[in-house]
Amino acid sequence: MSDRVAAAVLIALSLGFIWMATNIQASAFNDPLGPKWVPILVGIFLIGACLALLVRPLTTVNWPDGTTWTRLALCLAGFVAYAYLLVPIGFIVATTLAYTLFALLFRGRPIPALIAGVVFSVGSYLLFSVALDLFLPTGRIFQGWF
Image (cartoon, rainbow, N blue to C red; front, side, top):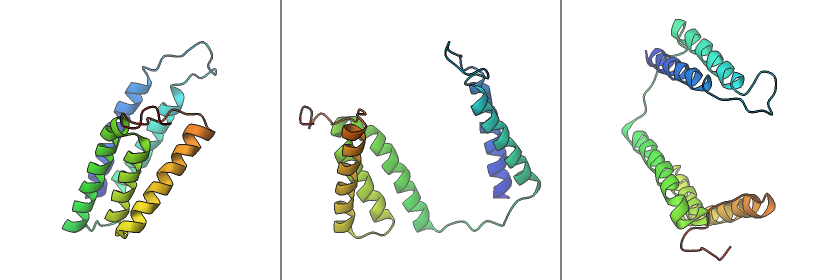
């Protein structure tokens, strides 16, 4: 039953996605089809896949237990907190905190999770900010350091 509910929700989202894609304005330097056709085709493909799932669901669903739901809710809260903290505290600190949180939620050990978070965030910052010359926020605390 949940396959069909998910398919119905995704069909509704796909229709909204297609409607939003029809409002994309083409600029002077585009290909002959224009920029709106790729999202429209993705939406049509998703509707087709969901219709197939409505007709013939794949399996019966085993819902996760309470601890898994709690971990999923904490993951969602971690992503939201990361989005809100990225500019004030900067990419390196926010990414370290998020990486460590997610590692702990997937049953990692605290000290290795923190070390891996620092290595990953500094490495990512160097790759994107220095090597690729993309802007990543340094945070109000570290403004002017990087």
